[in-house]
Image (tube, rainbow, N blue to C red; front, side):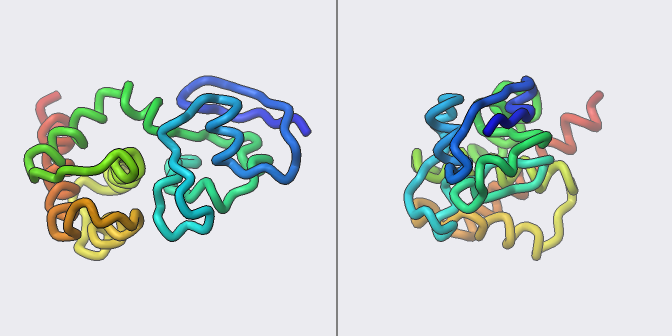
Length: 159
């Protein structure tokens, strides 16, 4: 089965087996190794990707569903100007993330910042809880996302 989609700003295509999940195709075919495959049932959230700017757990999505969509992983987001806002926000909040959750938390934050630079408490907590990892406390993650939103707003207002 041939699929075609946009990955990190580039049009790509692949010949895949219909039973494969996004995690398998993105890691093995396109070398997006930031995707973690820890639980295979969305409990951890480490496999998060952005599909049409929305956070999606890649372990639950069949790869053929990527057809004609825009997909972003941390490999692509980290090359954009706005990524620095996320890094600066997490640094300012002293959020020390582990290698397992950092990419997914950055993608979840990016998705939220695309929606609002002044997120509600519910948006902040939903975003913070979308990745389940005990390396950093939930209040620290919420503070980091808030700082990232401020950084993004400051940068955009300076233009």
